[in-house]
Length: 185
Figure 1 (tube, one colour):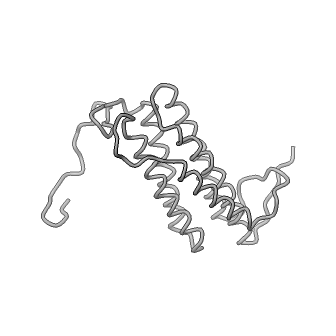
Figure 2 (tube, rainbow, N blue to C red):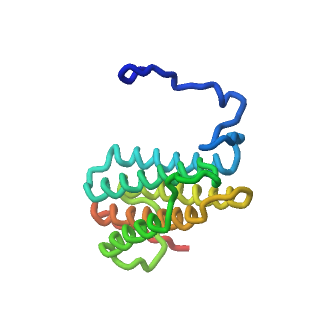
Figure 3 (spheres, rainbow, N blue to C red):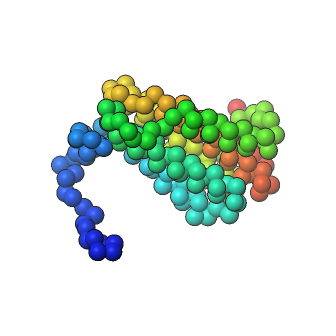
């Protein structure tokens, strides 16, 4: 691949034996809890890219692009050893930003009085799927934090993000005039 005058290969062969490097000198197995966690965040970020490929609403597009940028920081945070300083990390400001985004979505929605089934419009269904991936990422970060030193702000950040995605899905249904189906036992 060539960019300007710099030519480089996109493969190094360093991971051929099942290990990868963190940002720092440490190498870890590719199935380590930390790699599972940032891999799931990458999956979530990629799926949001799929949503954005079909998304038409400027508010939804803008907010999901902001989410993608925050998820990139979250993935980099997990891929960076805790001893490395001077790197960008997820902070409580990021969590508060997601809370404000959630409050904005909630202000445009009726009060939820029942559980709702994921679905409705295509966009809402895709956002619900992203929410489920986000919950898995949260579980992976919790698992990684049991054996490694992980930024403690990542769990609240992902927890709030999944709530935001839930409410964004509801908002997508409201905007497309799709009635939410309530869950009944």
